Amino acid sequence: MEMKKHKVRKMQEDKINVVLISLDTVRADHLSAYGYKRKTTPNLEKIAKNGILFRQAVSPAGYTLPAHASLFTGLYSSRLIPKESWVLENQEQLIQKFSLGLKQAPEPMAQLFQNNGYLTAGFTGDAYIDGSLGFSKGFSEYFDFPTILGHGYSPDQQEDKTKEIFKSGIEWLRRNRKNSPFFLFLHTYEAHQPHGHTYFTQNNPPPLRLRKLKTPVDSLFTPTKEEREFAIDLYDSSIFCVDRYLGDLMEELDRLHLVENTLLIILSDHGEDIWNHTCWDHGEMYEEVLRVPLIFLNFPNAQKNIAVTTPVSLLDLYPTLVESLNLKRSFPYPLDGRSLISLFQDKIIGSSTLFSEHMDFTINPVPNKVSKFNGHYISVRQENMKYISRRFLNGSPHLSSSILEESLFDLHQDPGEKINLSGNSSDILNRLRNLCNDMLFLISKETAFIHDSDYSLSEEIELMQRLRDFGYV
Image 1: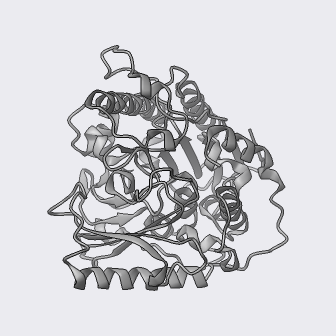
Image 2 (image 1 turned 135 degrees about the vertical axis):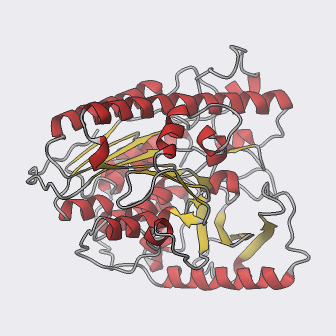
């Protein structure tokens, strides 16, 4: 656990508070707030009905660390890595390079708020969002609650940690409610494996193979109908659990008379592939991993009960907050996202190209799988067409010669991404491939800021050992 303290800033009545909640590993299509068949998120439904819900929000990355890095900086995660470091040898080295970029980022989100007079605090589930990786930068207080991550089913699930995180956040609100403005960040791994909640399992015992999963590779099998349905029941039960804590938080905000003067933002960093395509994990570029919830409550000068259908990226949150809250940037480096304010003002903005990526060094014993294989995975979405490719992590991912495999999907006709059109849509494929190459060339050749090659990474030693214990490094 890590804690940093700074002097509390003077109250500024004219600024709205901000509470940002990241629900790790939550896919949008398993939330009743997004039309899911089960009542998994009754509290989130109430929030959405009084706020703004984005139906097509996409994560810029396939797992926790790079997704949050992009969220906090407004940059593609690759742009945080020094260009001379694009030839990497293992997952641990990749994590260290992300950490180096985060620690030297001139003005991540918390720093931005702090520089604008906000009191800042964060309470997280540790691991890939641990403060030692650089995520604590700009927070007056940052607490990591070490969480036991894993896979499959385990009765020793995460609820105690989630309860502690939300309880600590609520206690912080009680102590600091008069120290406006404030920026509070809460993060939970409740929906991450291992799962132990059984609200939707009807108390049936878990199938044997689900109890034996230890790493993502262990789930690279074709499940029986019973196994997949039980996995979905477990996953939905975990989402239902975290929704209860959202309800507790909303009650406390109301009791403290903070609701009307607080912008609440609820999102997820990525979803989960529960054998929709290959395994029971994440990191892929399919919709079940990339499409995430994004909901605003009390967005300044916006109507209530709005459902935005325009595709957006989590990258857009940083510039949107800058513009909507009139935040002044001390280090105005170019951002990769765009402000979404026009969407709330009945203005039409041009269609965007959504780019997502995932670097993976996980060894895959199953040949020719489009998942869990060493490589740089990239997704490019333009309107209804989506291109996915896997490339060598060889320092030149922008070259077509680095492509190992590629797919093309029409999301309107094939939302489940089951029909690969790459063999008979050459014009569209070439256009999106070239767009992908151009994008990769820019972000591999231009880091957002100058890196200090002598910057120390010693703080991560303990964290790396925990990630090894979880099977993630």
